Amino acid sequence: MKKYLQVLKITLQQEFAYRLNFIMWRVRNVMQVVLMFFLWSSVFSDPTKQFFGYDRTKILTYVFGILVIKAIVFSSRTIELSGIISDGTLGIYLLKPINFFKYWFTADMASKILNLSFSLVETAILFILLKPEIYFQSNPIYLLLFLLSLIIAVLLFFVTIFLINMFSFWAPEVGWALPFLFIVIVGDFLSGSVFPLDIFPRTFQNIFYSLPFPYLVFFPLQIYLGKISIPTTINGIVISLGWLIIFGVLVKYVWGKGLKKFSAEGI
Amino acid sequence: MDRAIVVDHLIKNFEVNIKNPGLKGSILSLIKPQKKIIRALKNISFSVQPGELVGFIGPNGAGKTTTLKVLSGLLYPTSGFIQVLNYDPWERREEFLKKISLVMGQKRQLWWDLPAIDSLELYKEIYELPQHEYAKNLEELVDLLEVRKILNIQVRRLSLGQRMRLELIAALLHKPEILFLDEPTLGLDVVAQQKIRDFIYEYNRKYNSTILLTSHNMDDVINLARRVIVIDQGKLIFDGVLDNLVNQFAKEKIIQVSLSNENNIKEIEKIGKIRKISYPLVTISVPRQTVAFAAAELLQNFPVDDLTIEEVPVEEIIRKLFKGSIKIKK
Image (cartoon, rainbow over the protein chains, first blue to last red):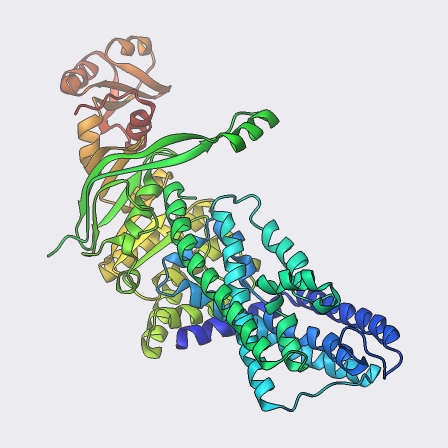
């Protein structure tokens, strides 16, 4: 266990070494939230009006929720994996007496801790500046389910990113582009980080809900806001767990294949 | 005592995609990838005793690095039997990984943006070293490699030579029983090379650890290893003591004479092949069998002040081996 604590420490130190990158990333997230805040606050200027099942308080809570949940779910070091595979540094890791998956999950944790602390401070500052109405969930069952869905989201993102990065085993030259495209397209759009997904027509929503992506951001927020019933929540948790298992098994399988490939070509 | 490394009939083939030049070639290779088998190691056998320092020599692409990668467990052998410290390296068990270390000249294991000491602290935990053992090992290595002053400097700010010395510390912190060194002096200047060489020699002597070293820098191997393994085009062409390499492959000896005048200096070429004339010194090479006769001839017919008989330098033999101008008898 101490091994991984040290991995956590060194990854945090390394994040500090890249201060500028980190700050730019935070600025981007804050800008996005500020933009959405003004957009939605003008749409919902009348506090009594409701659209798509949101009132002013809930939609603004959604916007701020994105900032915090993205910091928890999307902060990741595993996105570097493709580079490590394609330049052959993977060999160095393989010869260390350490579990590769645990290593990267721990590194992700470091990134999450750092991003979460920043996002909380940012939220506090924005809260003071913009004075939005915020919805507080007080039902312990919803809070518990919210926590559960968040844990699933973190794991689901880890296996998804791990899986995508392993493309580098077969196509070292495009390896970096895939994780990047994933974060931009899926991370921002299909997960509900730009618009709440329930503003889309019913059929689209049904499709979205059968995919793994809404369970990263949208679904936990829906639970927090108490917008979906307990049976719907359980249903969603089952689907996301299903995806987690499928991707988890795939990661193991592809990893084995990838290592064979790695060793066959001796990259 | 058990042998540290056993390699028996090792074969390693690589499968690579080949692409014809140009855009057309790129598209074609997407639709119908053409595979080519590269035979990197063709039936290699050898074994190493604990505490031995073995040097691998061979030109680029001969299979030196591939051999080390198979032995450390990074590459899966196509066929053959491999045993390192009684483990199958490919399984990469934790107990095995704690007993070996691989240092690659062009791959780094230290965190680039952090001072080396941070990476070393991490390796302490990864290898589960007790504090006192870590402190003791670190102290010794820091002294041997003279790096105390640079431990707290960001690795990216160090010179290549300084970095290499720190890489060695990272690799040796857990006192591996076997150390694989792949081109440890790559890109270093002469002074830095010498420092690394001295250290490797010292380390092997002090801790009796088994060291396998590859280098295309012949000085490394000649200065360090008593035993050398010569690999060329995936085949093992020599395995033994350096001196035997000379006896086995050098068909000539070198005679150097110092002349008191240059009257009939041209005549010397009748006795042997002239390698160099810089009066008063003349160097010729003659067949091994006739060296005594040639020397007598020289003393009789030329104004010789001094005469020495030497072996052909190892570098030259190896160079000729790789160029194929010496035939290998099997």
